[in-house]
Each structure stands twice: as C-alpha cells, then as structure tokens.
Image (cartoon, rainbow, N blue to C red; front, top):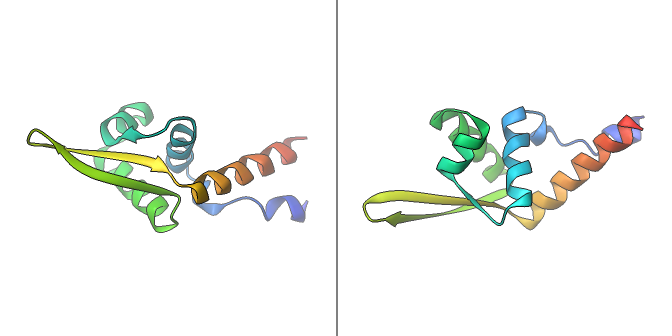
Length: 96
C-alpha cells in the first residue's frame, strides 16, 4: 500500500488543479476563459491554481493580445503530463 501512495502527487490533490491538468492533457492548449468556464471557477481561483502548477513546471503559458484584449493560452508540459499520468495510474492501482 505504501508503495502505491508514493506515486500520488500533492499538486493534484485539489479538484481545480486536477481539473486543469485533466483538460490540458487531452487538449493541445486552452485559454484562460475556456478553463474558467469549463471548471466554473473565479478568475482569482483559477489564476492561483495555475500559478501553483506553473511553479511545479507542470503547465506553461503564452500571453498575447487579440486586438486590445489579453489572451493567455495554457498547455501541459511534458513534465506535467508525465506527473499527471503517474498520479492517475497510482489512483487506478489503488482502486484495484
């Protein structure tokens, strides 16, 4: 049992961060507004969880402007995808 728990990543214990990674792993990228609507969270809540994942180097972003409006796209890094898949595999093994 202890062996299974070591593969769980604390970064994904929060449902918003789990949702962010779930969405980014299956999409090439998503913009801030799309993530916010998909997860039904506030700007500040989403921003703080994205920052947490950025610090772990699990997600990265690109900021640009469309006209005068800021447009930020996020995507999962290779490191983030690997960590997320490891976390999900650990959950699946726990359920067996």
